[in-house]
Amino acid sequence: MITSLLIANRGEIACRIARTCRDLGITTVAVHSDADAGALHTRVADTAVRLPGSAPADTYLRGDLIVKAALAAGADAVHPGYGFLSENADFARAVQDAGLVWIGPPPEAIEAMASKTRAKQLMGVEPLTDVTEADLPVLVKAAAGGGGRGMRVVRRLADLDAELVAARAEAASAFGDGEVFVEPYLENGRHVEVQVLADTHGTVWALGTRDCSLQRRHQKVIEEAPAPGLTDAFTGELHTLAVRAVRAVGYVGAGTVEFLVAGGRAHFLEMNTRLQVEHPVTEEVFGIDLVAGQIRVAEGHALDPEPPAPRGHAIEARLYAEDPAQDWAPQTGRLHRLTVPGSVRLDTGHTDGDDIGVHYDPMLAKVVAHAPTRAEAIRKLAAALDRAVIHGPVTNRDLLVRSLRHEEFTEGRMDTGFYDRHLPALTVPAADPHAPHAPLAAALADAHGRSRFGGWRNVPSQPQIKRYAMNGEEHEVRYRHTRTGLAADGVTVVHADASLVILETDGVRRRYEVSRHGDRVYVGTTSLTALPRFPSPEPEHAPGSLLAPMPGTVVRIAEGVTEGMSVEAGRPLLWLEAMKMQHKITAPTSGTLTTLHATEGQQVQLGALLAVVEDNTR
Image (cartoon, rainbow, N blue to C red; front, side, top):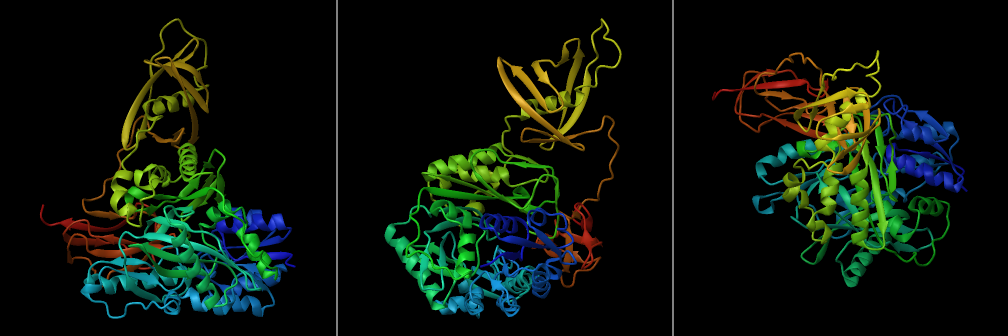
């Protein structure tokens, strides 16, 4: 029996594994980088061991340090979670060679399936070798790992070599393995997968289907179970293929077999030899705990001959600290508050007051709704996200709500090209119900308690003026102190204190919850910035300035790029790495590269000047 388990991961999945271990009476050991010294996963574990450094390559990808930590802490098992070393056969062997229980498939099964090239060959699918124009578009893909890292769609043959270099670098950084391959890219298919769980006694469960078609940068955003619109016969075909893959490699434990469904056919993509990020939707539908199943299988227990019967529908949305309107740029900063109302499941690795840094994935949480029908699950999840209180970095919350309510999604007609078609419309600033009176509510909350200095006078109070920036515009509001409290033209101030303002207009009362963090003010879900009364002039950057869209590391300067050279609009100049993804910085216009401040390996902050391209046509 396992009594103590080291979780070789961080964030949300580490917290989720720790939760199951508590339920099973198993003590937990966390590992953490220096950047994660105070992270939630270290606080929910019984013991924590430091991995010196902050970058993944120095910490969570160091299998030797993790095995050493497990032995030092007295653990007798290791769970890898997902990502990092979860599909690394050498790490699995090192764990077993140290006398520890590996919560995962045999290393031989990992080797057979964790490399997507070998997995495809096993299933009779060969990758492309000599790519021609006739093969386009193609997908460059990392052989190890997942989560969209090391993946690039190539539509022009001239771009292939550069994208291969970028994919290799990104894969090596995220997984410690820079191997990539090329396969045909099927436009507008559906991403459908089958969750499997197998024991050492020959029983294999195929646990329904999941649809994960809504993706950005080949990373899933919204997932659901079961996949809508599939016939029983087609689902049975997918189950048969999944079980065949499991038995072909002697697989044990939890895994996922992924397909691209297009033209009424299922095209094998890969088998992930680990727990998937989206596993909660399967858990909700089947009423099981997959982490507990993994542990029991590792202890040698047998599964029941048949899995539990499915019930209802579940949908998961991944809440990211990112700006979809700015090319999905990851965001950093202090997460002041995260609250999601309603009877939904919230899996997160963050809590109020945490700092969101640049080293790791920008996912803040997974929000999961389960209901008797798909339509009810959509409504439940969209409403919970719509009412969520998120104070801190910009997130994709509004995009998630709009995606869930989009007719293509509600009617089950979505595919992997959903965001390619609809992103501009989905990121247009939404009408905010709090917006009309949000600045006034912020000003009244700020004014609470400031008025009572000295006695009241029998003369009208002079209007007080406050200025706020909201949705890119400046708003000025006026209010007055009266004998009975605070007042403003056009509304009745029913109540005002530092955290709650109630205003009445045309007989309708509305509540505004107000929270302030520095110069940032939140009124409900509306974010405002308090502006100084006498703003000081700010220095302006020269036209053509390229500013860092996020904090990160300059990992590469494009070959041949030097100051004084002529560049064309759109030419890649350099690459920034932030939150395990690489972001290409291109010339904003054709002209002369007059300044290049960036150097390889340089750490830059948000808004840092990277380069200047002077437009010669002006």
